[in-house]
Structures are given as structure tokens and as C-alpha cells.
Image 1 (tube, rainbow, N blue to C red):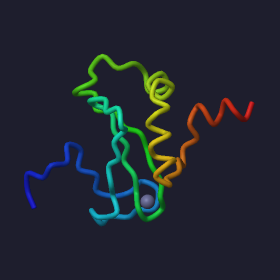
Image 2 (tube, protein in one colour):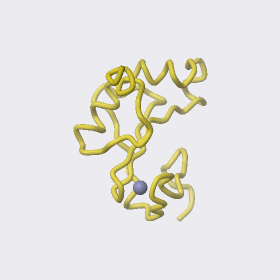
Image 3 (cartoon, helix red, strand yellow):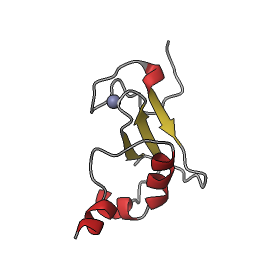
Image 4 (cartoon, helix red, strand yellow):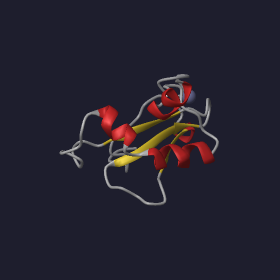
Length: 95
Ligand SMILES: [Zn+2]
């Protein structure tokens, strides 16, 4: 188990603590954008959007990037995952 394909080895789910590799999945949008990906957990069905700043070195602040990638949320929601950290879209709806 060395030199794996994972760019960012994720050792455990930050929400439920699942550590098994089979529980930690990476989702990709249909319109794939290099440097963006979704990390999801099969145990608690939580997901987070992530940005690889080594690729997207000119990316904006996290909040701006979050606004700019709603299609990633759609992919995750359609796959049955939810987001423990409220997205700005969800916050905006509440107002
Ligand atoms: Zn989890």
C-alpha cells in the first residue's frame, strides 16, 4: 500500500470518523473541472467540496469558489449525500 492514486490521502471522515478506504469516496462532476472534487463518506453520507490549490493556484477565496461551483453540490445531492456545513446557497434560501 504505497504510492497510491490519492492526491490527498484522506485518512478519516471529519464528520463521523470513518477510516476505511472503502467508505471514503471521491465524486466527480459530469463537467469535470481540474482541481475541484468532492470527498464523500459512505458511512454518514456527508460530503465536502475540495479545491486542490496546487492545480487551481489562482483560485479565489473559499467562499467565492463555493459560489462558483453549485454543480458540484448538485452531483453530491443527486448521489444522496448531504452537506454538514451549510452551503451559501442554503443560507441564502433561509433569508
Ligand atoms: Zn462520515
